[in-house]
Length: 351
Image (cartoon, rainbow, N blue to C red; front, side, top):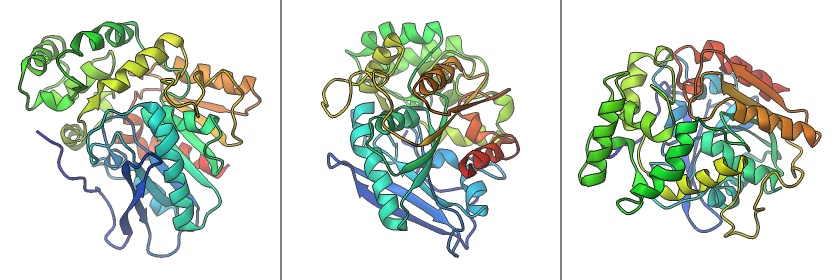
């Protein structure tokens, strides 16, 4: 089963919503979803960057006030980047390097061209965050003024069993598939998808949503991994069945190298990028705020603590905000995020 076409929830009919295509540096076709009030925004452009194997829609869960609505209602000019991992784009064997070198810099430039703004703020999540930070500290996005990074930035730290799966399970499944797909919880064919479905059914009993359980099995160690169920309303838990799809093993192989190193490393294919992204001072003057849920089981909170220490070592006045009783994606999708999380985000954007 393939995900349904993306439609944004809770968008006022009088707002302007448009899709703006852009071509990445290597020719890959991506797009930006631009959402604003009809009158000119009173605040500047803010770019939202999703994680792996989802799409821009992830910032618009079926809650009363999702992040897109929260920002637009307060006068922000909102741009959502569908980069090459987006499930709205053709499947490809992407790496973080490609996103850092080709996607995010061109997305930022496109936003500046379209708005006439000299600077862009950004809220970035998970692998949208790691690849965005790779680009930022390499000096490829001087237009970025402020960044709010959720879950993981430059130092990925995962539970021990997650590291085991990256180092041993990913190579073991490589002869049978070139990707993993939470949609296998709903529809699958072939030996490996059926085997993984059996393993998920044996090991995950936390809910009756098969995609939720497959996502937990694929992306970390938790029951569930990507959120706390009590933070999601019923509609969101059902809606997310169609919001997770294919992620190539090329990503998991690179993340295994990063986890083993303790910091982000490039594939070594692109000489424009450093091999070790923490091996030099960051080439950016952007104000960086790191956030994480204290119950995150995809990337442990220690991930952001290590990045904060590294940034401060290099003179950055980086702030770390840890949200109790939140995990990974429920930071954005939670039924109470508009009360508990988003006001903090806006305060950081306004500093």
